[in-house]
Image: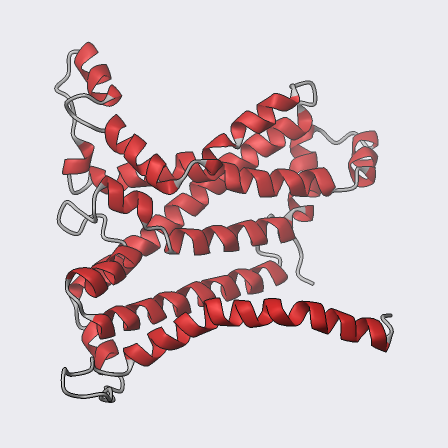
Length: 296
């Protein structure tokens, strides 16, 4: 229990940081919320006209918005599921294979530290139908070089592959850290009772990892919803609107079409969606939906 003097000291030290976070996070959210319910200022007017929910109604009536929302949902679902599966599988493999050198763990997480713009440009080069490595492989096999980024179907899945390659180490790192933090007493007792590796994973490790998996899924959902840079440099949202995720839709509305009100409304909806999904993950975690655990 902290003494009153120490409590005051903590407040003094934490107050500047809280104010800074409020300005960096709270103010942009407030500005977006304000812009989403007002019309843009006219040249001869200093006051913004109240728009109410007009921008939101207009947004919900646009097929391009629903397309962006659907693509963002599909992108989030696929990347989170596959990256969690890959990260969990490799984390469990390394957990039981203790003879591998430490350098292997370091090399595995390197893609996570590559900048999104660098990753996007690299994969754009890989998919290049003229000079890319993928075209070289197709040509060596006697096939016509493919141009996946020019195809409305394959462009989306090419972006998904890029995200999986770059971000699976993020989930691996979280899960592996959770595994390393688990006490070994229950595992040793299960081994003594004759449990094999599969039983140890399904009945001991996965239930114990439930909070870790919930955190990993929540963080990955929020990361997937706000992905922008790598998709923008790879496809620019095209061909057509095949890779125009919700984050790209917001940027296009604001900076390509100068529709600040609709863009702000879309960004607020994106924020609400992310918070709702994060809350849902927390509720599912508490009910024991992850790793077959029991609710609290």
